[in-house]
Amino acid sequence: MTDHPTKSEIPAARTAAVLVIGDEILSGRTQDTNLGTIARFLGAMGIRLAEARVVPDIEIEIVTALNVLRGRYDYVFTTGGIGPTHDDITADAVARAFGVDITERADAIAILEAHYPPGMLNAARRRMARIPDGADLIENPVSKAPGIAIGNVFVMAGVPAVMAAMLESLRHRLVGGPPLLSRTISAYLAEGVMAEALGAVQADFIDVSIGSYPFYRANRFGASLVFRGRDNAVLDQVAGRLRAMISDLGAEPIEGDPPLV
Image 1 (spheres, rainbow, N blue to C red):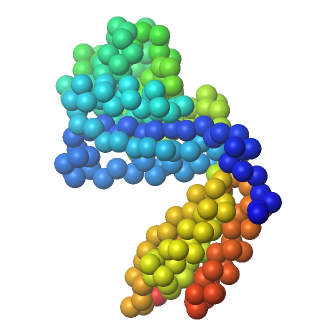
Image 2: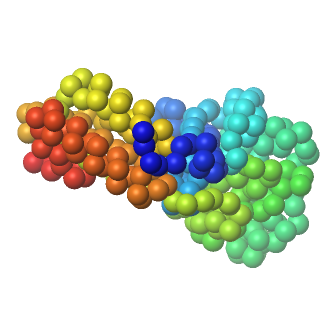
């Protein structure tokens, strides 16, 4: 019998999903780094990133994925497709998903007019002021073109520096909880050797997520055991069980990830 709280006694964490939009991601031309940035940001706020999807620049694909995700999670964050070119169709897809019109907004135009030199706010750039009806603007302190907040969906740029700035401006809009804590204990043991005992530890600590991540270093196989939760005292208990498990299996527990050499 354990003395830590059961999962039912712990308030449910807010959950989120990320929808990455863009042919350039799917083609391999651009490597996405936004997902990691968003995951770390949300984890520190106590919001669990539960799913991520990548879709092409096809409106119906964006609409379909967005409607599934916004119905399943507390928050949905999209990245990409809100620029001035013909293939930037995210705003239109968001409007279609919510069943609302999309129009050029005076407040968005004012932001762009203040940013661009006189005469430089051309028709292409004005496309970035088209906002779904009923949406709020997300501040963009880098390139100024605003993002979109509607319902539980937050629509952001794909450029990493711009996305990160927009994400920070959303902090006050998000309701989180205790931050998700993470620890790692590693060992030069194959996953198959640890699997049964590791499963027993997980069964005793259902409120903690325990993952096994194999590695190969110094001509040896091993695995890093990463365990995440919101209660330090419970994580201390998990750490003790994992250290004992590793020792019982004839290896030395390594705090954190193993050395690279």
